Image 1 (tube, one colour):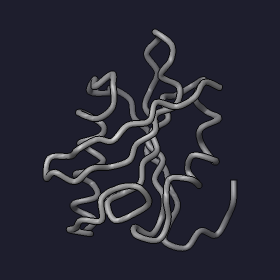
Image 2: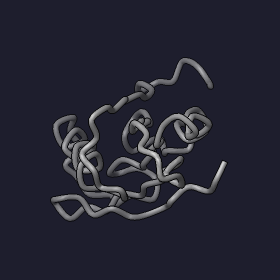
Image 3: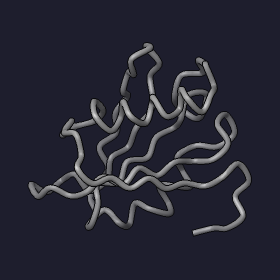
Length: 117
């Protein structure tokens, strides 16, 4: 597996999110899989990376530290509505190839992980 593309993406309200994109090294178009971590402010993208990066031969796998978590800015608001706006921003304006995906998958863990990968 190739190394991920690591970037900092500034979303529409100025907050910077730490993002990793796996599986974007080929010229073929693959669906985008966005893997979320649980409990904003408590967890990071490390678990979704461990759980889903191995699927990078089938998908472009995007993991990121949500606002207030890990290496991303510690700037609110910390609401479900804002997190969904951040996800939509990453889907359509985030790391290259910056193409509005036709097929996306979204996965993640809840506030209290009850399983491991």
